Image (cartoon, rainbow, N blue to C red; front, side):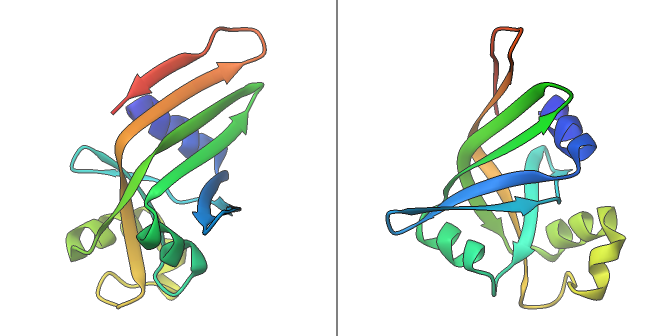
Length: 130
């Protein structure tokens, strides 16, 4: 999982896919954190992505860098603990003008039953489960 985190952190931007009914939805994301041995992302509860994940927690993200790409699929589970939110926001101080660990909007989610696949055009895919 550490390798997944480091790849996403170095990329800076990854793309998260969710579903809304039968329509896929993809958007750029940039937050990633490891807290208590789990890989987390962050968003706002008022956003459509949050509503989509609460209706169907299955999601996949994809990132590309230096000729290699990473896909992570699994369920994204909401963690409403202030400690988890604070840990994420401490990693991204620029978000603290929009989000707070104590507000009702900040949402952090961790991957459950995740499968990460590292791929490239020149190497066989490598899979990590966490």
